[in-house]
Length: 423
Image 1 (tube, rainbow, N blue to C red):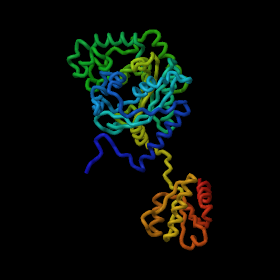
Image 2 (cartoon, rainbow, N blue to C red):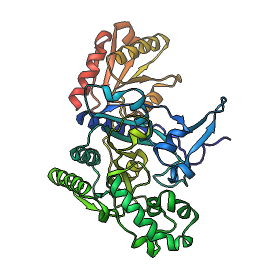
Image 3 (tube, rainbow, N blue to C red):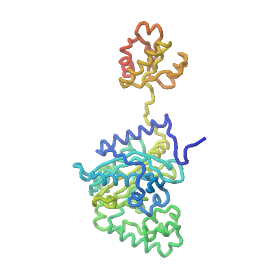
Image 4 (cartoon, one colour):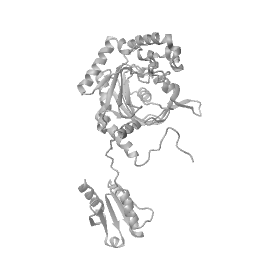
């Protein structure tokens, strides 16, 4: 028997409704914040992620699904959404749109070769937003607020924002030199990844999980001590906007994020109840990424979260989403001619916007009523030979047990009336 690949999962009926609810909530909150949906290809040229995500990141070095197509081109299943969105922004000249900044969101599958665990799969679904074209600290705060409001409206609690500034290019250069001087005398004590990153990108050393407990890691130079006046002022404005919005945060000077494109604001949203995987959202500002992708020097900021971790947090906190799984109407036809009429009525109900179904296994009346119960049908319409001769159907309210006869042409409105009364 062929089974689902490791690190992937089938999302079945009964569970998919939770995904749909969360995705609908994401789309609704993006509508309110005036973010528009974008859909990019699932695979891109590999160079996009080397340039956009960073050569020295774990994603590029260890986790990408890369292959050659029949034309010898190197392609990669997208491991994250920002690089693709920025590529599309540049390629489609969205900087020329009249409404700026360009505010986009995406929901779709991403792929990383990681060790599968709860809330972390090799194929996972990301919801993310990108605001491209503004240098305002207010839009940094808006981005964080959008994520927090999304979680709050799902009912999640015990969340907090961890915040840091990675500064501008000048600040990062000074911090980079301090990191090299700090780690270089003892770099031989670190893992091979850290050793290879010392000169290429020493900031990535701070993101290492294997050497996280080393003393040199704990007392490494922090970026906040190397911010120039402009970067410090920017960070102060972001914090003030968050204060004004009533969004609590803690400054974490060790927060660097796992991607190379971040500048200035970096943040994570943490949940205290899901164990080792406690980060449920991460993002930040990337002022040099658009230029790196061949565009003009346009700033941007965004975040991404996995739907799997949202579901895990909801489960951990015991939150049940208000999912409506009931069927509006189940139609039963007894006898060949009645079955034909039931089939036609089924189409009428569906055209009127009602969810409806019938038996397709030629079961007895009792078995069909049980099927209606399993489907949690709000109403049942029954047509027998007698009803067929008189041009009526029996409409049963499954909650109260009340029954009434209804002319065929009035079945849809009668079913709708029963549903409205029971709300």
